[in-house]
Length: 462
Ligand SMILES: [Ca+2]
Ligand SMILES: [Ca+2]
Ligand SMILES: [Ca+2]
Ligand SMILES: [Ca+2]
Image (cartoon, rainbow, N blue to C red):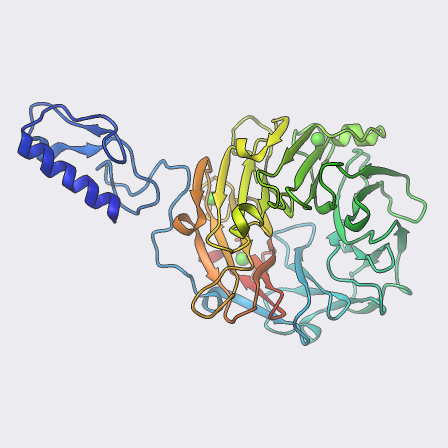
């Protein structure tokens, strides 16, 4: 509104002075004048002003061609009204982590619950208590700490981490019922310390078998376990980056450069934080040197708390990455877009930077690499679990639509969903997928750890 008013006052000023040559870079943008016509009628901004939901350049379209597509609708969006399903932990207060199956367009959703010390598989769009609506339960024993490390390893198989015992277990969820990690496992692999707290999977050595990255953040270590997954699998250990402990606080496996080997991205969120990229072709030969390392801008940025695919935003054929830094700028948080082809450096040099609203911890959770609104550009979902509103520290989730470049605040541009009550911590974890209602549009699944709730926001919302 203020920018629009400023532009109007410029028009009045120019008309009164009889100018036919507009000053450059006056106020917010360059001014253009068509000669021979009354300036007061024909002056317009050459370019759109970003995110103000107005047609600044007079071409009839609002905010077009800008780096971020603005949300010109009213925020926040109604979480309960947009969600097709709401899954409730019977004993809230712990961590609750949603993950799609190996096909995000499938109907399977997995939810890890540290309270229940279990992983639940849920089919389709459902509402109710997690233990009732789950078709499959993978149940840990006391001390296993099951719930955070969780990934599909293809088909009906899942890897479930039990960082309490350093064990990662392969389980088949093809038949409904309750399975014990100890008794019903297909196989298990044991690592050091809290191994299994972070899990990601893909074919890193290109042999057709799914491999796993098993993270032990407290031990500052990640291990590639080459499939077929078993206690005797061959492994490669990736030691922590000395400048930033907490190796593997986040992990991602995907073929960034398209060479047929899935590559590994590891976040180390301690202090400033760092994210390193390892080529699958190197790891397959036992080489563990990073091909790129990005470091946080500030000493407490916690960059690498979350990492996600961004799709190819830069158009060079290499998949790009989102990096979450929830501690950035005193806890406002930020999300950085970095080129997958870059060699790393400070995140201050990122391709795009999105900052959070005050003390919101934006970037604690991230998902991307899918086109949610069907315009051909990959979109992004980011959690801000400490975001506040009039009801208290409710937490928030922002959905942002590509293409992305430049710097912006999510407060100006995103679709916002908010938690309901103080302490809900909406956005503590999230994922894109599954297509729980089967309409061909991917749902966005978001957790509110403090409330013990998981909401499935239907893709039709976007
Ligand atoms: Ca493999
Ligand atoms: Ca690769
Ligand atoms: Ca899109
Ligand atoms: Ca859907």
